[in-house]
Image (tube, helix red, strand yellow):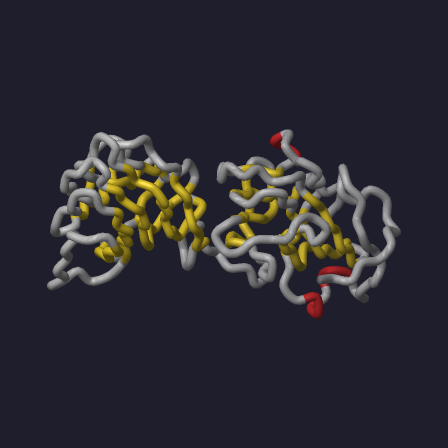
Length: 305
């Protein structure tokens, strides 16, 4: 993280104050030894877009600038607490939603570095798949993208070496999703939330055929209206049994499943079962009466889409 100095210049960033000044380089910012940089004009602004599912997070943007007289400036700006609905938030003064992120640049300068990270004074940061950012410069009605990637507690995307990754590239966030038990005789169902994309890694549930009748057990997924696929265990669960089911990414070829006694059953799911927002996954059974489905957990990989 860049060294912080006491402010020595007045209100360089419209609504904020630079956290450092001084350290002049000879020859101004046009000197060859300054390396890579982007000319920034008066009226340009820092721009940040976020998508987030992790509670109690604040982001910090650090910019390194060079004024025309060669003065180096380090500017630190914070957002307000991020929303957790996975919706896009734009932290841009011109949009009236700067949220504590400072506004327009008040003089010409050169941008030589910028990074986005969790604010170390707020709650502990997350892992890949929980907070996605796009950052850059706002120029009039346009947006110069400098980087886009997920951030983690130990990774902060930074210009000039920032990656340009869309929100569904590489690994997502692996987590357990708990589903509430449905009423007796009813199947459970879970819907992929708005702004998310899920890869279903496994499904666990316990089925109690308390109604003393054999039942067909399976898993189904839909687009919210139409059934897209169903996996059914090859034999019915016997009457008056309690059976633990695990549906996972395994090869079912030649698998002979007999569900005539209490215990556990492992059955396959498609290896790449990916569901976008609004799609559903749930049980597909012939249970009724006092039969129950309990202990329902999904292991999922989630991206913010």
